Image (tube, rainbow, N blue to C red):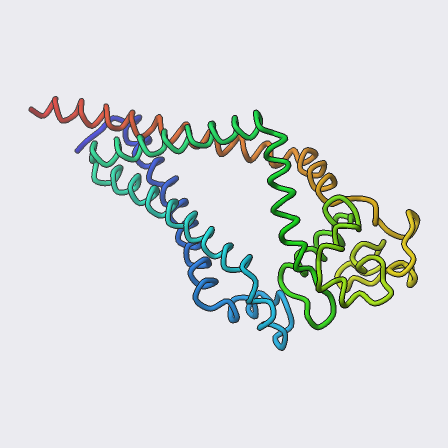
Length: 267
């Protein structure tokens, strides 16, 4: 079917957008599937931990939950982008209208979730802290360290904080209490001279923490929240994603109308 320049541009712009999302969705789904089926090889490939300790890092539920989240996100992106691409290429009003409707429903869900999050800000805050508290109960050090503990060490080492609210949060972890010895705080809570290896600048920091050698009174929840607020790039990304979302909806229904018009002209 021969279209004018505007319709032709809209058609292939929609195809390009959806092809990009199709590729991204396929990659995300593939990584999620790989992580769900064979955690060992993926973690070894990414060199997240030493090969001899991989077994300990593939046990926590956090790894399995991450795999399922990636699978869901990848599957949704795959399905939506395939629907939009196929609808545009085949000039199908049915597929495009279905695609546009799904996009509108997704946009409404995002707006509702954002609105509820803002309205029930304190509830979201409490639930977030409760989730983090559950993860910190399995915190461990030494040979028993797992993926959750590694996550906490990296978070504290890079953001200069300790626990959720402060160092007392680690008392909820039996593994930490039983293995800490004479230490008061984990090494990751100290001011570090080597963040990658979690080497404290003050050798006595873990056993005798103070405001000058550690962040033991500085909770990670507040530090991370403040860091997010300062990230203008995230705001820009959110705005761009929202604009792209609206553009895809407009293109889908505009093409539906254009295809209907050209079909009527042929009759």
